[in-house]
Length: 378
Image 1 (spheres, rainbow, N blue to C red):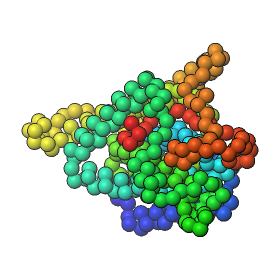
Image 2 (cartoon, one colour):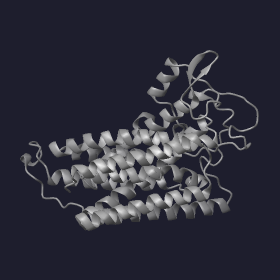
Image 3 (tube, rainbow, N blue to C red):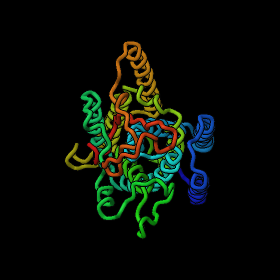
């Protein structure tokens, strides 16, 4: 796929403008979005992704269009899984509902910038060394097995969010206030000295957590397309709708009891696909004398069909099981694990500010069980 320089430039400028305008609007008017607001925004983002794919179809053919749609659907499914840990982060740090949209937006922008760097590095690596596909494939299969074991084992202690090294370092190095009076500001003056606000810590938690998730999503999408432009756009469209999904899905997330297992099957499928591709392109001298291995490659239409099929079966089976268990009075992990945001302090501490919630509504934020963790959290 030959993408002219001006297309890259125009795309990056447009993406920057969209996120900049969004951030400015949220920064000036932090609020909890209504269901209508998030539904309209999500419909627009999904519609733009579909239109983009049709544009690829008309300009570059069906093969590349199918690669984009497959990559976009996979990134979207992995992004939905990320929402589990995002819910826990918001509850753990006691983020008022009216500020959650801003925190998600800034975290998503950080994640997109870091993912763009990952994409450039990955594209350069696979262009120079075909054996990188062996590493990508092995890593995805390892991640799939670990993810499946975690979901089958249901280890409650490992399902909670744990601060990574960067958050622990920031907590020790810089003074952090527990007060949300600063709103969306990152630093304020308290008792005569400048301190970091809870918003700054939450944004770091969201951005770094999503970066850890990118360690498996980026190799996975390179298993579907090696076109850097399509990889970038699939990630952009998946992340653009992530904020709306967070507010739209809400409690529905905990009903997707088989999502982790479904994603493990999906990652394993793409991992095998990558290894088959690596064998087909083999140049390692200690494997088949450095000659290509005549193994079949998985066509993109089969990959797209597998993605849709796996996600469809996962969703239907999850909802059937959740409905059946609800009728029997059975609760799943995370259904009762609700955190009172007034009893949760920054970086794992506790605070007691009374019964009123941080958003002033008296409601407590609910956490949900995380099904997929980055390497730092395993």
